[in-house]
Amino acid sequence: LKKFKVENSIFYGEGPEETETKDISIGILTSNKKSSKFLLEGDIQVPRTRNAMRCWYNSCRWLKGQDGKVTIAYKVISTALREIESKTCIRFVPRQYEYDYISVENKAGCYSNLGKQGGRQELSLQRNGCIYKGIIQHEFLHTLGFKHEQTRSDRDRYVRINWANMDRSMVYNFYRSYTDNLNTPYDYNSIMHYGRTIGQRQGPSNWDIQRINLLYNC
Image 1 (cartoon, rainbow, N blue to C red):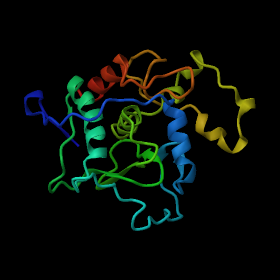
Image 2: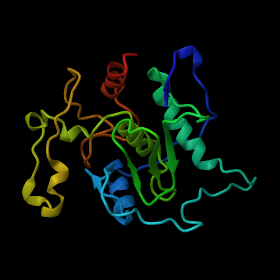
Image 3: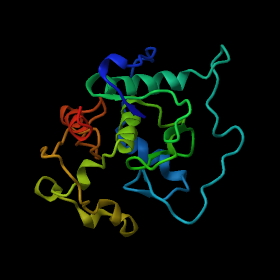
């Protein structure tokens, strides 16, 4: 991940038309059920002592197209990233020799670290369940440093968490975080908002884009 001026943008080939109809949160949480990672708030990877489940030889590989090239997932991913690039100063470029880089992998689930970790940084997009534009953008915004909207520090002024409906073992996923909200309002339309009736899948909202530009001084 590098920051470039607009004139240095790398343009990718067009991906297939977006046909996803599922709710982002349902899609992510369903895909992550089999993950052995400790995932805060459902899809934010945090360290823990136990080792991650090993991937068998074929289970973590991207499938090849009929022409022998692994291009199907790349087109969807690059199209999702290009939309972020078109509205911000963020540029996603192929790694050459950089020490710090994002490694997009076909692991068990859809998840990412929060912000820059240093060195090889894993971002999982399982080929069955995660290859949708909205999910890809959601996970990359975690990598850029953004948490879920419903856990921001001032969320209690805008939403009510129904604690009684929760599995007690999952309560920690809904604790508020000490977040820098960049002087922007609570955004019910954010791609980072979970829920069946809040948030959306079409792409980053206007406030999502403005926050990226504010955080990275675009």
